[in-house]
Length: 98
Image (cartoon, rainbow, N blue to C red; front, side, top):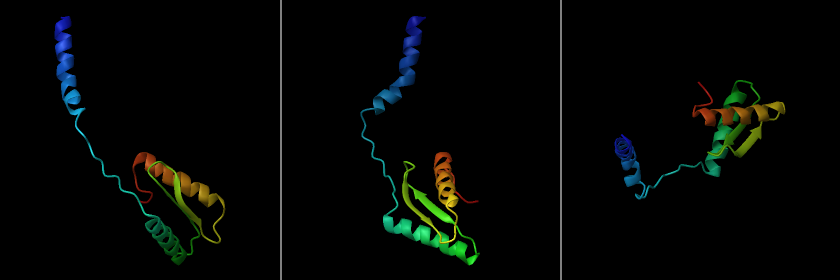
């Protein structure tokens, strides 16, 4: 019975062990600073057209703030809310809008 368990375990783990030596390259996409500025400016401009004062926060894959901006009349709280919203979207791998 013990031999059967060992054989079964090897059958399950063998594909992972065999692939462990293979090199894997992962392409990680990142936003440039210029792209981040365009995103922030576009969001603020679109909201200004609707007479809405907002804050926009763009974060990187690690959840660190890459760029944050608050429109002239937006209250201070909007920056914290925007950062938390961006982090939540990152955590759940979802968009911040519907």
